[in-house]
Amino acid sequence: METTRRNVFKLGVAAAAVAAAPKAKAAERPTQGMSFATMKESLRFTLPAFPGKCRFMVVGDSHLSLDDARGEPFKQYSERMSKPYRSAIHFRTGRAIASPDGFDYALAEARKMNVDFLALVGDIVSFPSEAGVEYVKKRLDESGLNWMYVSGNHDWHYEGMPGTEMALRAEWTRKRLAPLYQGADPMMASRVVNGIRFVFIDNSLYEILPEQLEFWKQEAAKGDPVALMMHIPLYMPGYGALEAGCAHPEWGAKTDPGWKAERRPRWPEAGHTHTTFAFREAVFRAPNLLGVFAGHEHRNMFAFDKGHVQCVTAANADGSFLDVRVNC
Ligand SMILES: [Fe+2]
Image (cartoon, rainbow, N blue to C red; front, side, top):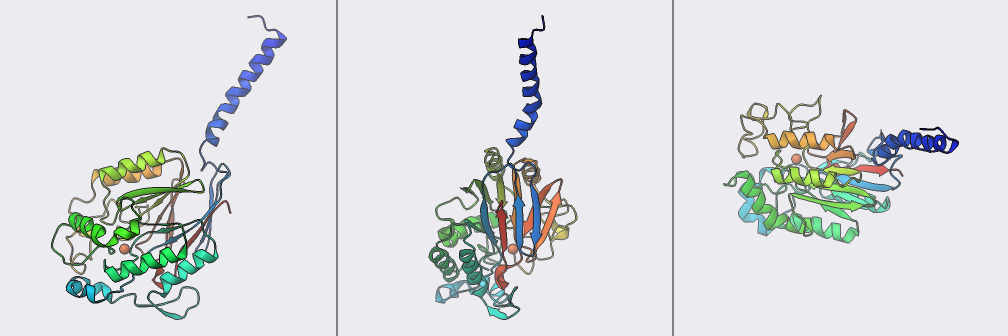
């Protein structure tokens, strides 16, 4: 081919296009070049490749134990968990507070901060009393906040009640916790707020169901920055099975000290299902993962694995929450 001036120009354009291609592809990933910084309970994500802004709050482990005469027939199942967390030392003021002050404080702060979204990551109530659920729903409705909820291991659990855990979870989420899902599927749901895709997965039995794995894959494939909200933290190297038990390789009968006190079946000898391990893989394989946000541990824990971050909130019983800002 004769190299004319015109062809050189064309080749030059083509070469430039080839050189630009990887860059253009990288820019399609909204978390490209993401950085993360923490200051106490305030977390800042900077996403240069994402044009949006979002501020959201994560609240978990409020452990409300409100009850009334309607809860009398269930007392044998709620007794133990009705005692702890009735009082706490406020995480900011150091003053003694009584439940549900911690929960109310977080909602008031969320309003003051004008958050775009509130994620409730479970153990908001210590057992599924009608009084507790009604209180939470009323306060959330009054707040005017944009919120979503997923259950923890206590919200639906009446300790010692006969039945399999799967059946009990299905029964009591339906019978009592239903108003907190606002019509969404209790096991898996999502909402996009200011361009961030918030995905809620119920892992309150530590395990992930095949349909939840599929749901995650479909949601993550949509390409928005995706925040995973669950009660129990995912395994991250450095943590034990009690600290980050979902998909932890050592999770199982040998690492379960609480089954007798909580009057539930012991974790299985064989450990996790393949689906649960596959779920963790799929979460950390998502190139658009903003982060995993969880509770359950009652203390702040921030961990990285191969560039992916997991943030665990302290227990809201003492007013604690995570204040998460993306590009703002
Ligand atoms: Fe929990």
